[in-house]
Length: 398
Image 1 (tube, one colour):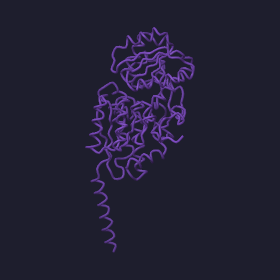
Image 2 (tube, rainbow, N blue to C red; image 1 turned 90 degrees about the vertical axis):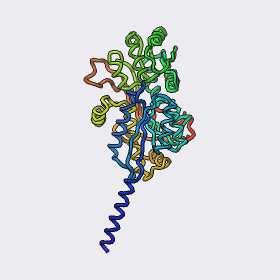
Image 3 (cartoon, rainbow, N blue to C red; image 1 turned 180 degrees about the vertical axis):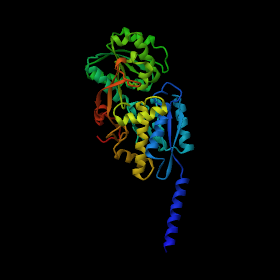
Image 4 (spheres, rainbow, N blue to C red; image 1 turned 30 degrees about the horizontal axis):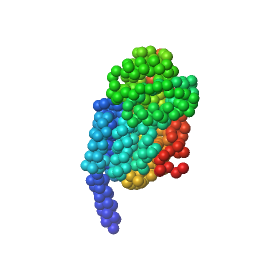
């Protein structure tokens, strides 16, 4: 009898082991920018952050090996969608992560709904993703134009920055960021005196900076991203614009400050969802990241890490990998990782988390590599992101 029980137990164990080995991997696709202007704030660092999330969680979930794959969308929507469709149709990718660039992010957001997959968006900023375009299949994890504009625009307007001039990237993200910022500037007694739009991947900003200079604005808002932000603020510094007006990077990262240099970037205001030097835990995680990526982590990259970790925890907690069940569990359990504490996923797909107002340090204030930011204010997620009362998302109960 004992031999029979033992044989059955061994047989069941072997069957379970064989099933785990034969089960198709749970594939997570990091769709990012490896070659264009967003490479430094997402790109290879996002891929490393994804791998670090899996290493922290463990190599398997529900008996399936977790596999991270990645591809370069080159900041081109058609290429991004082509890659994502192939991943879903050919490789059975369960979730698509990162996706810097709002035009591509919105396309992947729509595709995930069409194909019943999950989009874990850390890279795109358009607040429309969780507003009029909301979907039950999307998690907008890190930041959006509404929060960036409110945190920076309101703070600078309160400090007396009343007359604004915008230098804006001419695509969906830039337009949305300028619109959102304009709203909060006006709410706090400010005024927009002018603006100019530029194509992405612009190297020479001298004509745009000169227009800003002649506007006599006391705040210059940069509604762009990546190398465009770097070039614009660096050239604004060369023209001495920062001595006459406050500079506000409406979407800036540690990597941008690194590229610009503290001399040109000092005093610039920015908002961020994470910073590597907040506490012992963020410093320890970031040290590991820096060893692998050779750069400090941006909020996009920490968002890739956090969104994957939360996704895997939800699969484990749900005991299933069906998108509807996983999304329900992601909304149910609190978001906890090295950079997010007490976060929550709202029904519109918006993750509600703290956002920080930061100011770039003067060169003499920096104590070492990547010591670039002074955290000026912590803004609670409920105060930073669009409230339910203002939302156009039909998934939200008002």
